[in-house]
Length: 389
Image (cartoon, rainbow, N blue to C red; front, side, top):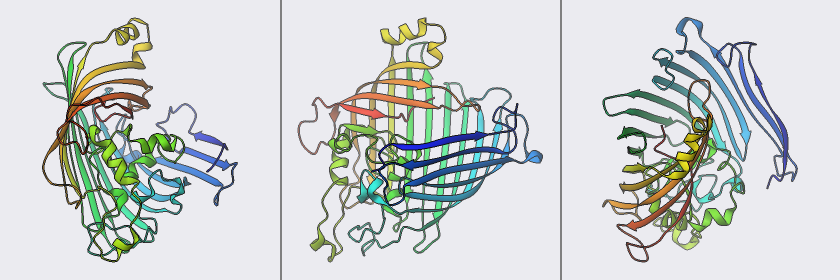
């Protein structure tokens, strides 16, 4: 609905500080040439270090953000603190505390509007009455991340929690643990455990599904932020998977079918209609076994290319349980298959991944398929990875 957007991006910093000095600015301003209701959008982030609490690689800072784009407004201020072990940017601890005002004011930008509270009178969650909200939110969000190495290999632990205060208050949070176990230069095992939970009145954009993360996570990527970047028929086909959440990738199609279900107006008055397979609580375990392939060996033989481009080949197994949804039982479900992932990564100045991953997954076994046989050829094109180091 935006058409071609015209605009500019601006990054400002003190000369010679290499993005770790004072007065850091990251901003953008765009004009949509198809002139929707709000044709001008912008993003602004200003970061100011706190010298007394900062050291080399271990900065503390205050950050102010302001954004109005793709039908979503976010204004906030936060505190970030990082502790890094020497010069190794892969080993660190980091804590962020943010307070934000947020609201989706135009669900035309959402690939699946039913996943958002945006003044949707038909939306019913686990409350005994229909979910009523003007979608204004005041959130306090706490994020903590640890990345280090142990006797098995690299690992990470991420904890996220949030509380919403405006109108009906609610809370939600998640825990993610990753472990990499290299057997050799070409063989390895990646393990992931994920758990997420939310209170009964939580807005649908923060709830979980079997196959992917909450809808709010789509705003963090330019690929998924607005409907149309990925053609909508692809999104609705059930053959495209966005990594995240429980990540039971084999159940993507059944989730997508519930996301595009047509509302039943007559059912709403009886307060017993659930539009989607969203759930308030989920637990999952994902594993991928890496094995060598000749294309990645070719990349490794070219100087410098291996530092930025990789092609992983792997076998995967996902298992999880969803709780708190009227459409989903609490029994465990699982899937398994094979896949390939092409990664282009140029790390930022803190060593964090900055790039994209395109995957092709073949979940040829599902423990509980809604249709068809448990063993069947299924293919998924995926964006992003949940087992990345």
